Image: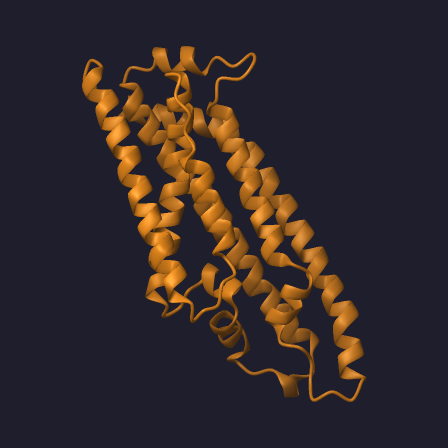
Length: 252
């Protein structure tokens, strides 16, 4: 087991610091944008004779937090993918040859590590969204908020419901399979490159994940399509690794 866990340690040593830095930047940018939204929109609405302030999810939409999250996901994706690719000065192939396990097993462990990085990104974004809801509830007149304000925001907003789907089973399955697919494909793409092939599945998974992240809560068809695509991609990556392992020396 130690030789397998060494792959996780290698991945963490190469990319964890960069991923954590990106998460700090993401949190800082989103906090600044949401604070600006509270400062800009709420005083105008509360003093303008309106029935009440805009819902918290509308403030998040006004400053495009969904797209900031998409940019953060793309940045994490790039860090994980580029670290494994054979670029100028890279010694990844040499490193793989020195491992005491098969290259395919190392790729699986790398995929698990990558998936954990995307899971960490999701956890940070979800915590930020919940924190913004609490900030909003503290900033507006208590007459306009209840204990259900945050719950209703996550139920109404496609972006927030995609982060924390609540009772939306299709969204939960999409979240789980999408995270797994992002993790595995960003590990398998460099594996394909080392053998002269082009791995495009990771870009497809990223595109579908980003574009489906803000669809309406009622649009379950998009979730079904995304889940189907992610499962097919996971199957194809597994077949590629199995074929490579069988063609090699069959080490664990």
